[in-house]
Structure formats: structure tokens, C-alpha cells
Image (cartoon, rainbow, N blue to C red; front, side, top):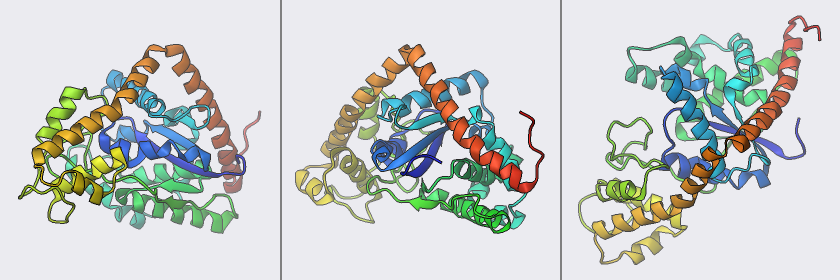
Length: 334
């Protein structure tokens, strides 16, 4: 479909502002991948509709996410960065794939159960069929590899099952994607509840570092971060708070845990938390500056969006036409 590189596909939902967890766990690592892979990154705005969105803010969030991708270092001329909703093939392929997906498979999806429990007043069909749309996202671009976290492994597994089932009937139509496990990156936890993942939607404002937080806010949140009993800075299973802070400091500075322990030997948690906050604020400063530049340069951003949407549409149409022909849909008169 593309050149001789393998295709890597990923994306993030266009809800809220990206967190430090999104950045260190995924986005920061994406920047180097285009040397090894042909990379396609989506602003996943269709997925975001499983929750009610305020339209004006939603559009602003989606454009902001695109700008953050670029500000973080993703070159829109080397990577295909596009809006999911701008490529109709996602919805079209999702419907076809839903006819090759079994109810039992969807019933086993733990993420649906988790989200349904959190949003009991809005348990919609989109939440239930979310994995089919995700399968369409991946398969539409003949993706070879997909970066996955622990909470997305099930979705990649069902994508592989659906693709294999379709191929068994119609031949080698879809590439069967493999999981991509990054060499670096960490699962960043909440600063207030280090047993759970840092989240964009956390109601506790002190739990999450947002990429667009100013330095004062970042330092304040780290000063208030929950730590553990004792005062020694060391990485241990029974010290989730301090271990989470060490994960963050290690990702930002590139230092190993033993080097961090030596650096803060004899120093208390307070000094360490301040150092982590300073390191994070300094690291995010150029990203925020670039983000502000991009938002001011509307013409450049619009041109990149248009060019990449067209590129994504081209790739997607090739797969979709092949699928439509295989299942016997009447070809359009062009």
C-alpha cells in the first residue's frame, strides 16, 4: 500500500487536553518511529462521540489535539496525521466488519463493562461496538503494527480475529496487525491515587498534569502528590506513590532508577517532588511554545490537515473498494 516500510497505526481521542501520561506513555515515543515505520496517526473524533460532547468545545479540542501532535515533534510531512471523521471509510468499513463480529466477542470486552459502569446514564450502542470501529481504523490502512497499552490488548485481539475471519472467507484482504511494544515509555499513574492511571477526566485537579499546564500549576501539583511512608527515595512495589514519581523523572531525564536513588540519597520526598516538577515543566516548555505558534498560524495548520486528510482518504479508499468488491456490493459508477 505504501512504500517498503511496515505501517504503524495509532491515535488518541479528541476529548480534553492531553496529559503527561499520554505524552510519556505514547506521544513522546511516536516521534522517532517514522524512521522505522510508515506512521499514520488519527485524531479519533468519532470514538469520542460515545460520550456527549459540547460541539464548539469538541471542535476546539480536536484541533488542539492535532496541534499538540505536531508540537510534540510529529512532522505532518513525514507522518500521516489526519482526522478520523474526515475519512468516511472508517464508518463504512465498521458496518461491514460488524457483520463479521460475534455478539459473544463484544460481550467479553472488559472496557465496555468499565465504561458502562462509569456512564450508567448513557450506555449506548457506540460504547458496545467501539471495538469494531477500532478494528476498522486499524484494518483500513493495512496496518502491520499497533502500539497498545494493557487496556487496549483485547481490542487488538478482536481486530485480529475479525481480520482472520474475513480473510478465511475472501482471501488475503487484510493485513493481520501485530502489537507494538515500545522500548521506552511508562504507564504514568495519578498523582493523587497512584494505584490508577493518570486520566484526562479525573475530577481531582491535583491528580493530573496536563501538557498545557503552566509551570506554577505543574509545581503545585507535584508538591501535593501523594507519597508513601518513610522518606527514602527508592523504587519498590510497596511505594506506588514515590515509584510513580521516579517513573516520571526517569522518562524525562533518561536516568535509571539506581542513579535517581543515588541522586536523592539522604534527601526527603519534598525535595524530590520539587525536582520532578521542575524537570517536567522544563521539558514541556518548548512543546507549549510550539503549540502556541501553530494555533496562531491557521493557514499552515489548515494546509497540513487538508493534505493529510487527502492522503489518508487515498489509502483508505483502496482498502474499502477491495472489501466492497469482495463482499459483493455493487460497484459505484464513476
